[in-house]
Length: 245
Picture (cartoon, one colour):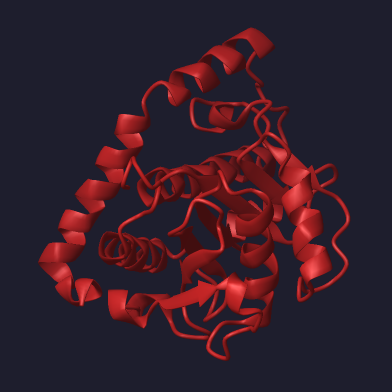
């Protein structure tokens, strides 16, 4: 990012976003050819990159990503309407959310479909989200309108994660690396919680004090998240370097 203009370098953003999409597919967290990842190039969120409509994430290359400019006032034909509704409004209304990732992973969506939806802090991973998770309880169908996108953006408030009841999850962050590590850990946490619930035994929940301290500790190691992402890019470089093209 250029500190003087607060504009993200498009070439690097394309590489990182393509990498995140590939990593997500490799982790089995994607859903068919749906769901969306985006990164805002401009500080006001009006210009952002997003994955193209209905292209499998395991094939996406940097050059495949679509550059959207909200100032043009038209929806590009190669971007899914729900992607425009959600990501367009979040980038517009929450410009601090430079990166927006929306997924329907199995375990996360299962956690979003219990009553009430939430992430109980039962281990080091799940405690990362203690008191740091907004929840949507008003799912009303596919998010294909700007009004619905604006509603979801409003629910974020001062948080960077939204557990979308009966739907999935949305994670926002300043960088692609931080967002990807966060959404990866979120689904790992959901797997742990669902596995614990499936035993039928009571959950051994951390105390509020322990959970809060753990969340604070997570916030102090952003370099861990970046390192995880960069290490995964090295794996991609060795096994499928065409993502950079």
